[in-house]
Image (cartoon, rainbow, N blue to C red; front, side, top):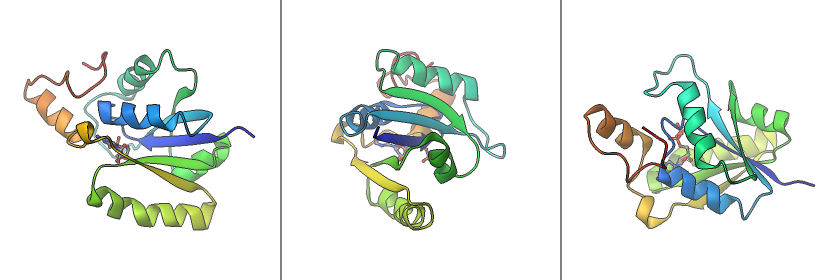
Length: 150
Ligand code: ADP
């Protein structure tokens, strides 16, 4: 049976931290679906189409990675895609605390297990919100994001 995992997030925008997690996840799973959550109430810096294109571009040579958008619960999306796992990246204890109850609820209620990948130390300072701040203020984001994010 194919081992499919969903890597959900806002990806506003995708960063080198996300890329690292996805690439390392490829040795654990046959297929990774990078899933852009669509939330009408949330204001994004980059449009859904831009965020989608950035990820497509970053993984255009990796057939294990596909990109999709979804609305609603991540667990429902996983079921629809036949994925039994959710991948999340962990940078620090704050990430862990936030993720713990969600992961436990997803496992108990939906039977979807979460797999946590510890971020590489060279990327632990990177977050999409830092990238957005730097970008808004005219700074250089090139060392934080994959090529193609502008
Ligand atoms: P969300 O809004 O769901 O937190 P993000 O796009 O910010 O979406 O993050 C998606 C996932 O990527 C989360 O699991 C987050 O912890 C992880 N992540 C974000 N930045 C990094 C990083 N620098 N290194 C490793 N994982 C990261």
